[in-house]
Structures are given as C-alpha cells and as structure tokens.
Length: 26
Image (tube, rainbow, N blue to C red; front, side, top):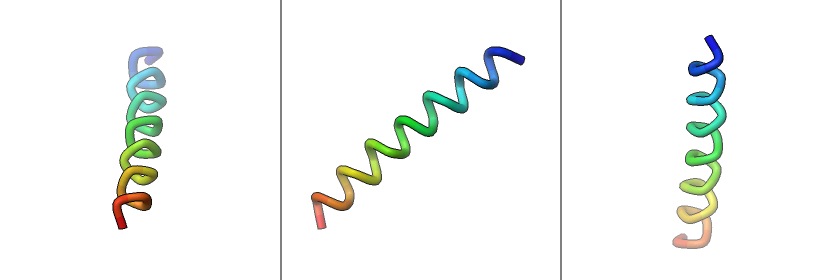
C-alpha cells in the first residue's frame, strides 16, 4: 500500500509541474 501512496505523491507532483509549465506556456 505504501507504494501506491508514493506513486500518487509523485503523480501529483508531476501534474503540478505540468500545470505550471502549461500555464507559463500559455
């Protein structure tokens, strides 16, 4: 179950970075 939490955290961070990049891209 810990692996799922770690994966979720990494996914959230990646999504944040993507959102920030997309925002600055626009």
